[in-house]
Image (cartoon, rainbow, N blue to C red):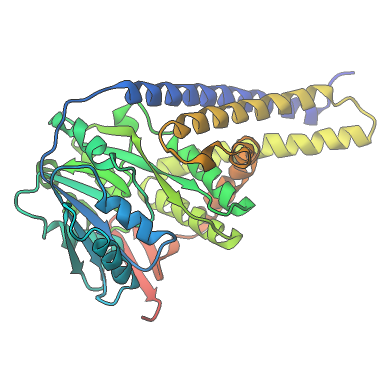
Length: 410
């Protein structure tokens, strides 16, 4: 019997989805090869004095352990500047407790700055603009890290080493969520975020800076006028990326600097986080948002629409073998990429939870739901540019204009 129009339409889009799946799998294989090649490299020592900037606002899960990991960096000479908008930020007490645990040991100098409330940009960006002006005059490298990241002891030295090449714009790592107690929402956030991590790789011109793990020469930072690029924005990393791309300066992804964030989340927190990321992406990199929206729309229509087609044909007593096989091929391609990606990251982050059966199953099985979530996030970003981030609500008017709508009371 000749296929029905619905079946022909499914075959057409299934062919597109399989092609995209093969392209994506190839990207996953390249990611694994890049990680392995970078892990095998040995760069000469390069240890200029560095300033590590840590913007703060409120408490993160595991904050004390995260701060202790920053203090414990195996690096010769660096300072840490913590900066918040208020002197009574509860993070300050945790930071001071972590500092005292290193009393009597040789280590970095530490300062805490109060930036005051932002007026025309995101609070994090405002904090950083104040902090970079206070860096030690001898500092040659600026490093940025977030309070929800827990870097390895060699993170700082590994992130800085490639900058001995003066032609390099910046080096970057990326976040990898590791659920603490588990739960579907926390694992789904990890799977959702993993898709972005594996977009980084061997092509410096396509890489981007993640504000939670980035290093740049002070001279490059000043020459590219990054502080001006930060003006009016809520996204420090997109603005820094644009400043470097505008100057045709490459960004090197350092896989050893994939940085763990040990956090759980509720379903509501998952939705809020992922919506915020896509809204920011639409405001500052609309082409990436469009790609996510179109790609996830094609996948969801084919995969879940195809599943409905298979069920309907089975109930009607019609043949469903071919569409079922196509769906299994699509699923297998995505699961293979997830497996390769997780295996590569497990070589970088030495945490047994990454090697657990629960984590493996989450990355093998939940990625179709992550695609549904990406589609939802993309649609929400199409109709709203309002985000709430660490208690402050913003309207992202344009890449250079941010309006602060409200703040949670102190």
